[in-house]
Length: 604
Image 1 (tube, rainbow, N blue to C red):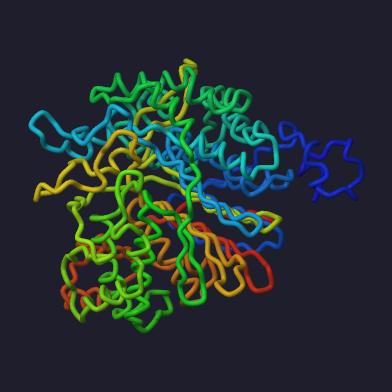
Image 2 (cartoon, rainbow, N blue to C red):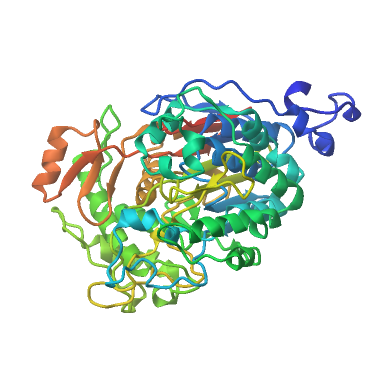
C-alpha cells in the first residue's frame, strides 16, 4: 500500500499509522488518479474471476470500479465507494443509470442489514390516465417512453445522501472527486458506449445530448474519443458543496421541469415535486427468506425482485429436478422445464399483486404470504410434464384479489454494484434510469455547458392502462406520488446458522433481472459454483408466456425436447450484467463480472 495510492498527507507521519487513524487527512482531490482505459468489446469477453483478501469492488464499468477502489484505499467505507461509483457510472455508463434516475440499496454493516428506497415517484399531478390518448387508449409503448410523461421524480441523489449519512466515513464532498475529475478532464468512449450510441436514433435529436455524443455529421464519437462533460462537473461541484438542495431545489430542478414540460409529449412534473422528494423517508425494511442452509435477503415492494425470485426458487425446491449440467454449463431438459414453469407461476402473481405498498395492500395483509411454504407447495403441484401455457395468479393468503392483471410491458436499462469493504461491510445496489438513456432527454442542469445527465422514463414501469380487459383496477397503475413497480433485485446472502456473509449479487436487465439473479443464486448455492462460473452460465427467462433461451448455448435437441413438451421457445441475446462477490470459507473474497458487459472487479 503506497502513499501515492492512498494520498496520505505528511501530517499522518509514518506508515505505522493505520488508514483509519488518517482518514481526515486524506486529500482525494490530490490522490485520485484517472486509470488507463483499454478498449473493451461490447460483446462477450471472458472474465477471469478475481480473488482478494481485504476488500472487493464489482461494477459495470472499469472507471467506476476504479473509483470505488480508490475510495476504499483512501479509508472509505463500502457506502462511500457506492456513492463515488454511482456518480462515475452516470458519466461513463449513461445509458444505464444516473443522477436523473433511482436506486435500491442494501447495506450490511456491523451485523445489521439496512435497506434504502431511492425509487422515483410519480408527480402529484399524474394519474391513471397519464399514458392514455384522447380516445382513452394506451399510447404505443415507444411513444410513452420517449415523452415527458415518462419521467419520474429522481431519487438517486437523495438515496445516496441517506446512505452516506448512515454509513459513510469520508466527507461527502470527497466522494465527488473521481466523477468531477473524469467529467472535466474527459474519459475515453468505450466500444460498448459507441455501439449503443450508433444504434440510438432518438438521442441525436435531443438539443443537449445530440451535440454531446455525436459529431457534426450525426456520427457517434468514436471508440477512444476523449469525452468531456463540463455541465455534469458543474452540477456535481454544487451538490458536493451545497448538499442535495443543489439538485432538488435549484436551477437543476427547474431545468428538469422545463425539459419535461416542453417535450412534444409533455409531462406534469413541477418543481415542488422535486423539492418534496427531499422530505421522503427513504429507509425501509429488507425482506429475508430462508432457503436451505442460507438466508437470502432482498428488497421489498415496490420491487418485485426478491418475492418473484424466491417464489421461483421455492417452487423449484419442491419440484427438486435433477441438476444435470453439461460441460458447457447448460442445465438439462428437466431442470429447464421446471424453471420455466415455476417462472410462469411467479410472474402471474407478480402481475396481479405487487406494487407500491403505500398504495396497495399485500395479499392477505402480508407479502410473505407469497412465500408461505404451503402456498409454494400448492403452486408446485400445478407443474406437470408438459407446459401449462400461461399460468393463472394464485390466492396467497386465501384472499381473492380485487386487482386486475398487469399487461406485459418491456423493461430495460439499469446497472448493479457489489462491494465488500475492509471491515466486512457490504453493499448491494441496483440503479437505473429504466430504458437505455431514459426518455432520451438530457438536462444540462441549467448551466448552458455541454453535457449533463439523462432523465429517466421510470413511469413506464407502471401499467400504461389503469384497468385490465375485465375493467378491474391494476395494482401497479399510475397514482400521484406512487412509486412504479420494479424488477431490480439487489441481493445479499448469509449462512443461516452462523449469520455470516456469503455473497453479494445483482444485475441489470429489466424484467429479466429476476431470472439473471436467480440463475446466479441457484448456481452458487445449489450447484456450488464460484461467482465467475455462476455468472458465465447461459441465461433463460419466461415472463408467463413464450420462453427465451440465450442464443448459442442450448442444443437443438434440448430445444426440440422442450417444444415437444408444449413450450414455445425463442432464442436471442440475453445481456445480463451480473456482478457478484463471494466470501469463501477461508475468508478470501472472490468476485465475478458478467462476460456480456464491460465490468470488472478490483480489490486487495
